[in-house]
Length: 353
Image (cartoon, rainbow, N blue to C red; front, top):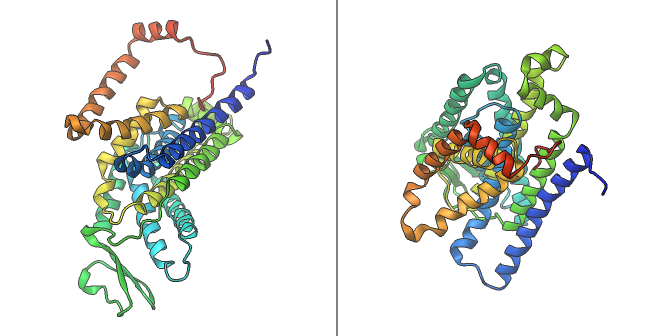
């Protein structure tokens, strides 16, 4: 039997990831066509897509780059509110809802990337706990800034104020963002199909980046920064590349998420949301893209399915306990060797798996 080389295994793992998403999408569409999904489960389809994209993007920073970020929800909020504002601004000039949604997602990605670049320039010079603390602060700063913004649009254009009384709109104007109330009266444009396409695009971007020359440089920096810099690899350049790409993807997911609800507040993108996404990444396996997909889907849907057992309010507590167990097991050499005997690791296994 012919043995696959490392490159072929990498390509195969990548196509398996695409196949999982396509098969899941087809199954969901068949269930929807047969009216076999409850209204509650139908309402979870778009958020699940958003959180899968968020998990993959954060895995690029935490698992592949090797830097701990605790403010990923901040990039999501940037994308969400910029996407909502863009969609509202285009409502009268672009009647096609799908086209408006796509443009809003692109704008969300761009704003997320800008936010990633602004925070990345000073932050990526830090390491370890210092970087985690600064990214955490960034997420909280973004949330508090949005809480004091009042944004509206009329025939004269976009208006921004920090007090409701200062937001002066013409008679044809509408207020889009109302400070602590967030974005209200949002026209819901998000669809499950667009969410599935966004996951595929995210996989294409991340997997091609990881398996490119730049990706190998990023992995080298993660494994040994000093050794990587000694052979001419610019740590700052490649860390910025990964960080900004991750932030752009998070912004796109945020735009899709924001346009899935009639109202969105900044509180939806707080520290708990960043930790939730980090839980998906850790439990799915650092650097394991397929694991992030499965963990995000299962851990987001499962609490909703178990709502009848009244455990939803304890979700974060349960996740915290699971994380502690995973960390203890992961650092126990005896347990690791036991799993190594049961599930032997294949040589040349790619991060795509």
